[in-house]
Length: 356
Length: 274
Ligand SMILES: Nc1ncnc2c1ncn2[C@@H]1O[C@H](COP(=O)(O)OP(=O)(O)OP(=O)(O)O)[C@@H](O)[C@H]1O
Ligand SMILES: [Mg+2]
Image 1 (tube, rainbow over the protein chains, first blue to last red):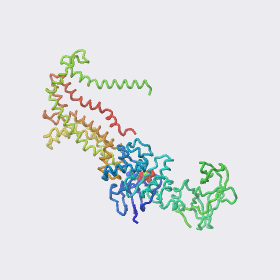
Image 2: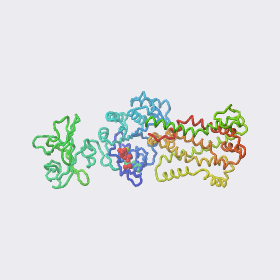
Image 3: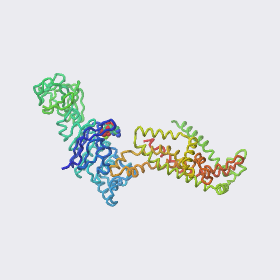
Image 4: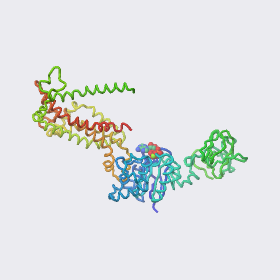
């Protein structure tokens, strides 16, 4: 099957600034792909390049096997939802929804029918005659979505469509957007800086940093087997703890923490080699009993009700999360187990993951 | 600000407005006076019996329809040329950002500084050389457009800058061409600012004096701004005729200003807020 969108060695330069470097990405039909990364890493640039709003400086961009490097946006047949929604302020919701159809020469009667239909899907039947300024933020967001789904584009492009919504609505819309994607069998590329959005919505997550794809794969693959320290720290919430350490050569690593505790790793390696040890907060288990591996003193405790964040004293600070509430208080001395098979090792210089 | 300072400011504003508007009032009053009461001492601030026939006389005597027609012709021509070329120029200046655009903007601002009385000689020589003086009204339109253009471009650019770029991009993705997005999205949204700028240009063209006076020699082609001065002769000045002429000339402009003043203020400050 030919991929819906395919990028091969795509480059983007702004003058001397290299915004996208050797981007290789294949989006099969029907897939939901999320682009994540910190601010300024080039997510929007990549999305806009696919849309044709930016001209790529090198490489090949194909949509349904057709090279589109030089095609203007209108010839690419994609739909895009902007962060600001970009609703046309001088048009009613109905006209906003059907603008693309109008440009494609669809008859007025058919446009009206399509508007009703889409309004039903996005739940805005009663607001069709309003102007965008008469809508709430959430309603505007829905109109922006409706404007995209009213035609059957080759793919949907989303640029942080939920970032202007409040937290509760964002969680709800996350599910709705994904459900919509599945229902209409769409192909979507979704930009977000929120890794939770990426993890929960996407089939395939692409982590960008400074214009480079650091890693791409299924969400759980990124979580379980991050390719480097950056991805390990970016994916997962709260973020992974990084502790300096050294291999002992006997299947363990000694952490540079008070008491020099050792924990088991599935890696031999030469004794004394310096490594960075990555430990996810949720993979550290608090136990007071003997035999626990890492003795620590708790410096601060944050309770959210559903979970509890324990911060250890000293440097580096280690964060531990536990489910539910906890009786542990600041100042308590506890021991930490590491869930077996959940120790990540990175080269301290290159940041790359070390595997045995 | 306290209520007292507020009131003082208001009083100052009213006083300034009164000083500024008094000549206008005097023009209307004088136009309705008899020849003798114009020079009455002390001056009469209200005309005794309004001499409406001053207007009737001047209308026929002074060829007002012809002069006004010429003014209108020039104003429309200036507005059309300025609007057509200026809007495109302003759009480009609003959408792109680089050194050349900055240089162009600076040049345009500089052009604003040059007074017509300075420019008129070189323009006259150039037009004469190019044979444009054969068509004096067209020549005047071109010369005046050169003056109104920078002003219009700067105002229009501000209007275009209020239209977010993403709207245009959304239109491109929705299936518009660049031109389509400009005409269907950008232009309607910048419409108010553009119309107001065009109106101001129209008024400038309607009241212009320096270029018309130098370029248009033929009395039959001159605009009202020049026609009026025909009544200013060295020895005797027919004051109420001039004032009636002047009143006929500026009243349409004043009416337009009063009717549109809210839009004008909004148009001029568009983009300043928000
Ligand atoms: N028109 C431009 N000219 C020059 N540099 C640009 C231009 N547009 C973007 N950049 C640069 O390219 C980089 C990537 O920008 P981009 O907008 O893609 O970031 P992003 O990942 O979407 O960030 P955010 O999460 O903040 O939206 C940034 O460093 C930005 O400064
Ligand atoms: Mg962005």
